[in-house]
Length: 257
Image (tube, rainbow, N blue to C red; front, side, top):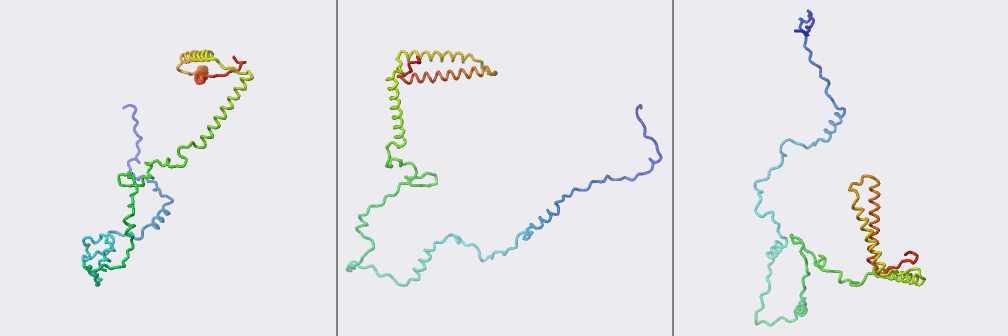
């Protein structure tokens, strides 16, 4: 067999050798072991026992009787004891032929009791399946706001706002009158207003057609700027069209035709 090398022969290899076991490293011991042992001994329960606790067994003579744990009313027992201990009897019922006893007065007034109006129960509202109820006035089902003193009146802040709007309108009217008197403003006719409105709509259509032809992907700064410019111009034209359609009377300066 080519390539195989035999080990060198030696006489010492024939001598028996002692087998030595590999030495294991020392076991890891934590430096906190004494502290843990001391804490566990100090917190150990001193009353811990093995097996069931030694208690006195109940006596068979003290067995539980039927209904012995039911609550007993105190008044009933006392009244029965008093009735048994009472030896005096009540006077007999007067006969039919006996004259009535005069001068008796009762604590209640019979006329007031007869003529008194019976108390009406308060209306309540049950709001749960377990029977919880509350007064109907506090349930929110009865409108309480109609009982207010200022119900139906305009609030103070709305009155103040209406007065401010009236004052602003009056000031604007006075300003327009002054400008017209000075000849600095003129009123647009219906034909001019219609022509301006049609021109604004035509410009908006042209910008919208140009906006629809933009590229779907705006990956360059030029495309983004063009799209932003068209959106601003269309928004401005839209506001102008709405303003022209809303107001019929429009004043413009004479020097701006």
